Length: 398
Ligand SMILES: CC(C)=CCC/C(C)=C/CC/C(C)=C/CC/C(C)=C/[C@@H]1[C@@H](COP(=O)(O)OP(=O)(O)O)[C@]1(C)CC/C=C(\C)CC/C=C(\C)CCC=C(C)C
Ligand SMILES: [Mn+2]
Image 1: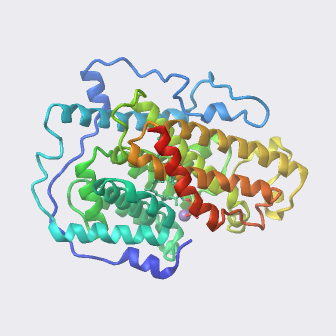
Image 2: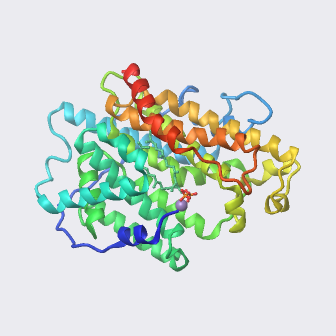
Image 3: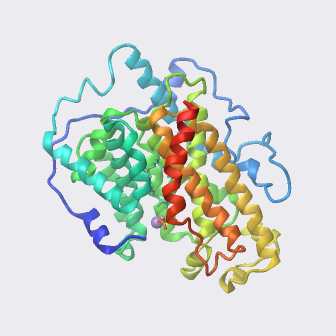
């Protein structure tokens, strides 16, 4: 949660810069058909983990199972984003970056200031992550900050001090504003930074729209019947972040991995983070009338909604939690495999954030699965240590 002064800072209106008219054309399917590529068959090593991990509490991962409807929907976006990146690489090879043709307007000082403010917001809300961005190239660092700020603001709409005023209409307006900034018509300074970022990197608008969709869900949905439903929610609010950021962080030029597999790993990191968030916040969410746990799995474990509201740690609860933690760890494992394929300067912050988040799961165990009244957290010393350790690991991997 954030302080109201920070929230206010995020919402400060700023001058409307006159942007260039840069359009993102993310028409994966058309290109796909035009080039007569094979339909995409997802190899088991790169397919999302969702269906596989349904059986998490009882059996080893059954990777061969078919993709579910939610996975299909999410994977479409992964492919689209991957195709955009491949196209950008292709064009760069041909000596004509897509964005260079139209990027005629120099926003000069205004833009510098906009990015600077994004950095300040990051430093305030996410210190470790901010530190982790310091080794990235300035262009990449600024772009990740701009994406971070847009995500933070979007989350603020439904979780911040003004959340009680937020209606679906307000989210529609936020989405229109997103479309405008992708077309070079930013509304304020933070938007201007993102507008510049999406003109320079091959970022697709869909993950951003999907994050807003996740916030729409939060306005009315407080139960998830199955993991399939929960997976889609996690994709919307967190998996999308992976898809937004990989085009900026870059894939290592010498990586042999397919673009899709790197995106899958990025998606997995977002899902893992959100599942961890959910497991950490069970008590807090239940006090707001929300249960982000798959109801069918709760029932299978012999637990009811009442048990969640009562908040008593029982053996049934411990067993249930062990299964949920195992599933979150599987997603982290999947994500970790992808980190080595990122551009070397970007591995460090990603690895550090992965380790930090994963340690929240250890903390839940250390609290004897009492996530009703005890908040699982990673202490400052561990947080600080994660950066140099991740740095050393990332250096070894390059
Ligand atoms: C190949 C490979 C592994 C690439 C890595 C790709 C990558 C960087 C993935 C990032 C994954 C990530 C950090 C996801 C964020 C997940 C998250 C915690 C989402 C939160 C949603 C709502 O949660 P809730 O309301 O339940 O909880 P709170 O109490 O509000 O916390 C979010 C808050 C959505 C908004 C997300 C952000 C503000 C984070 C955005 C982060 C970035 C743009 C930077 C990511 C970069 C690095 C280096 C970690
Ligand atoms: Mn939130």
